[in-house]
Image (cartoon, rainbow, N blue to C red):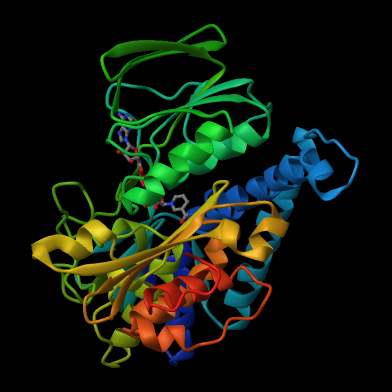
Length: 459
Ligand code: NAI
């Protein structure tokens, strides 16, 4: 007989640690199993935190190199090893904070690779952990293009974080969040960047007007972007990579220093013994879950990127971790409403959205009302030196269903959109609220004034 817990959580990423913290907060005895040396998973170690640190350095460089616009004489260049050191400091700070928190809360961290045993127990490196409930939160890893192997020059976001030089020429394959962020980063660092997306638009999950605007903004920044483009071949020769792709009716050949593949992330399920424990996977290899995040095995739950739920985002996994911990404790938690979870991409310009796109809102022939408010009409945005827009999608009766933004600091501004769509506010209700001046939030306020038929600065 091994150690006995109420809950064993496999994986200490954002999903796993949030489930562990909440379960412990509800008085459960919790074991948190992690095979990596450090707690934190993709978000802290290889995703959100290190990439946002790099993008912060890139934004500082952009500001310095544009400083004459604000009457300041300066010019900058990246000290790559110092940039990487900043990134590592940010990661370590978060890992240290998380490790301390988990210890303080009285969660037992078990180091090693976990394997499910029938009957909701878990084996870790030869020892058996008994647990009434098991939460699988093993996360995801970057996918490759079928038939293409990773090399020192054909890389994914994982390797990009430790690359010891700034490439001069880059092809980024895939224009989802990872592709857009790295294309933006490398351009800010001075590289010639080509972005290749298979689907007909960049940022294909966003509202089409956002896709058009990011394509325009990237073009203005000198990023060569191709949508509807199919990669035909990819190979490294010496220190160069040849990428051949079809763009419309033209075949393009690029020779570059680095090819970064950003075509999505696949589930991590290796060695977990899921099938033997009765946990079914979907055709795409994700853990099958019901609306309450229960797997097909009793008392085994799945959360975060490994679970077959609509969005692979850190904040989604926090929400799923909390929901599962509370359900294990017997609390009734409604199913998560994925449509009202904000989506944020930290390229320049930033993109953020919540709720339905115009195309989705119109499905089934529904009438919708939309408004697009240009940030160039907002004083604070002009002072920041950035354009973009706020687009609102509402039903004919005025209920707001979607907020889509591109421009300065919209990844922070979207929190207001989240409240609006989640509370099913109407145009008139939001138009009656007073936004502080001069702030970027006036972009939202004025979009609603315009939708309510009483525009202030917009036409
Ligand atoms: P993704 O699935 O969002 O985008 C991948 C893109 O690659 C798609 O647009 C797809 O059409 C394209 N693609 C696939 N195969 C291709 C091919 N052979 N040639 C050209 N294009 C191809 O995946 P991504 O960007 O790798 O991100 C993974 C996950 O991580 C996503 O769920 C994303 O939302 C999340 N993430 C979130 C961030 C954020 O919230 N700021 C930042 C980075 C990632």
